[in-house]
Image (cartoon, rainbow over all chains, first blue to last red; front, side, top):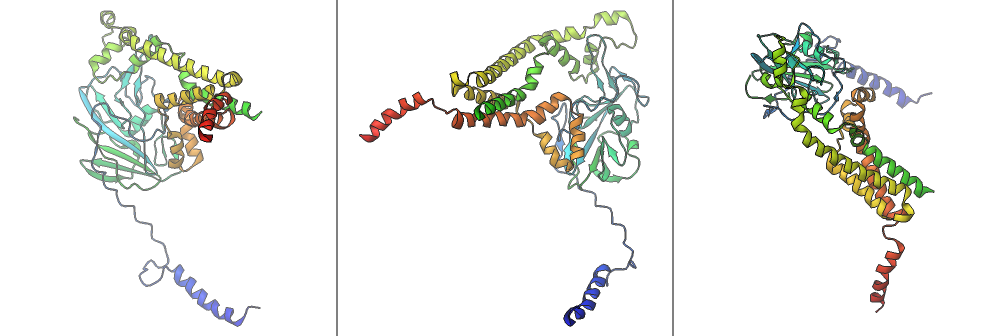
Length: 219
Length: 205
């Protein structure tokens, strides 16, 4: 049998629980229904930007290693993009950052390149890279509108709102920075255009403190 | 015998540390030059045309014969790769000598073998600068399956270089230090007597 004192405390305990479950009352106007959490604010661009002109140093931590394009392009046409000798009549660059729990991951070097051998000639896809800085080269005889999906197909890695290069099970947010202005992208990531000086940031896991910021000379 | 086990572990750690450079010896200078020529950054189409003889939109045989082949481009690099290969061979032979002395010459060479192992491990640290990315990645992914997803995509050479070597080099280094200081004895007894005897005389006087 509980004592009288304990029995007297039961209503007080119930009242505290009721107030707590209502969120403290007073300023809550949701009528008992939890409102969806507001989207996290867009992180600012990190300053100063890192210059990756020319053949730049690798940026970020190695995640995919040197064999991640095993399922990627081997010289066959992918998404209508041929693999040929480079023609730089149209030559622009886009930057891709993939950040996992606050750590920038390295985009492997030589994606979109099929090296020559003694018996076979090599070639370049019109989307490729020349270093592990994350800068993507789009080189074509005519102006083209390639997308991030095209690049991932050439790389041979998956890309969706739930899977980026095989990384799954973590919240994924896409950001696009054009001319210093960052916007959150909620559409199909495969449709993100690869345009000149665009910074594409894929945030996986924890919220970024700052969007990785890169600059380079030329287009 | 715990000493023999420890020597075997240290020797194995040293050999595992040097696994990639040892395997890399199979790639001869000529092949190394060809590899390099094939992966040389070729952003300029003119340079690309040099090393990609088979690709020619016109398909004319004249263009093919005029352009140098991959072997032609690799040829000037071969001298540098000859030197690199010889350096790699010298280092690997030194490592093999250190491991063999540690395993089979403990009685004869005493404290010299662990010293050679320390030198070989230090040489690795100096020449190859071990990467700890594989271990740092564990903290970044915060998930064993995700970590393994990354590591499993790496080739065996990268796994050996980034997962095995950084750990093994320290096992070899610390194990050799332990052998030197505790088990094998840094100073042979005779040398200890030679050093200590005059000191004792000096102290007693």
